[in-house]
Amino acid sequence: MHSKYGLLVLNSKNVQKLKQLLTSAATSLSSRLYIRLNPDQPRTDELVSKIYLNSANSCPKLDVRLLVSDIPGKIENYTAIGEEKPEKIEKIEKKYKKVVLGGTFDRLHNGHKVLLNKAAELASDDIVIGVTDKEMILKKSLFEMIEPVEFRIKKVVEFVEDISDGAKCLAEPITDPFGPSTRIKDLEAIVVSRETIKGADAVNKKRNEQGMTQLDIIIVELIEGSDEILNETKISSSSKRREDLGVLLRPVRRVPRETDRPYIIGLAGGIASGKSHSGKYLKEKHGFDVIDCDKLAHTCYEKGSSLNRKIGEHFGSDILIDGIVDRKKLGSIVFSDKSKLRELSELVWPEVKSKAAEIVEKSTAKVVGKIKKKNVTVSDHFIISNVKFITVIEAAALIEAGWHKSLAETWTVFVPAEEAVRRVVERDNLTKEQAIDRMSSQITNKERIDSSNLVLCSLWKYEETRAQVDRAVNDLMKRI
Image: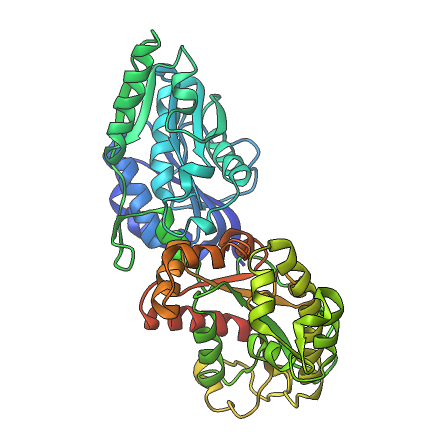
């Protein structure tokens, strides 16, 4: 049985066995590893980076924390990693009282921890941190998946105050490049990476203009990493977000399901998101039943249908020609008025949902529990692909219609808005302005993702998107 917490004490002798000790921690612990340096092992920037870099490779699932303070008093039960015991450390006078730093700090990782550790080493009183939000994050890769700023602040404060020896962490959201760095007069130093030195220079320039003292610039080297798809050479939050594509981000809903009935997933996505491609892949590769609600909606407009009658009653009988909706005339009404489009949607969605429910009800799909295999994997699924036990409801407006609330889980496919515009212009032969106008009638990627359990992104080659889907299906099989 794995222990939740562990303590690794490093000295001048066992530091040479760092990788081996971290690998041991990976097999012994389930949550967090504290690392403490004994007095005979000097703390250097090179060692701090080495510890976090090796941790990222040898025990990536553990929350590794290099202590500036003694062992946190609130952690009473921990497993010792290695044989070294902690020795008493004399308190060292800190160089500064107050230091400042900034960043997005999404999915707090070991690269962030190097920066935060440096700040904790330097400051005796306050560690002031600006956490970027709103306009400051919009240019970041996969920004739609960035954690809420309140959550990021909470994580940063908890980490800093856990490793430091009494310094307070004062974190706040910032929507400009300066934040508290040009507001708090008695700051003494700013901690930055080599890539963000220009930002520190800009801070000092503005402080000078405001008659404030200049900040010492403390440069920290970022940890090496590799992400060929994003062209990243350092450990980054962007890479962490990409790694979360095809992975369950939020717990599934507990939706009652009768025995022998299919497990239902919602598949959502905006215009030109790649949703249809993912739906097709789920059907052809993994044997899922896929109900295309966008196509199903067209059947609701058949001559004499109840939907046509309701549209005529709502928008005027002249919208109907011989019992059929004049789609061009209807389009001229709803696409120039968002409120009218919403009114139409509220007429269409219940009809489509009803038809989809009928298809699900008539389905002969069986659930995974009826398959007599103990460990079902993606490769195993090819053997049993003729037995369909998953139903996917594919609908562009699935979340807008509120259907996701009654489904066990919802998967969203997206691409950045600018890429969606490019695709629409190319596919539909529209102007850029027309494409943007058409997309403005939808909810944003961020809103869609925030209501989803799992996210896929089709920005890159088909093989990358399919790999995300395969990963999602593999994990799904284990869940159900």
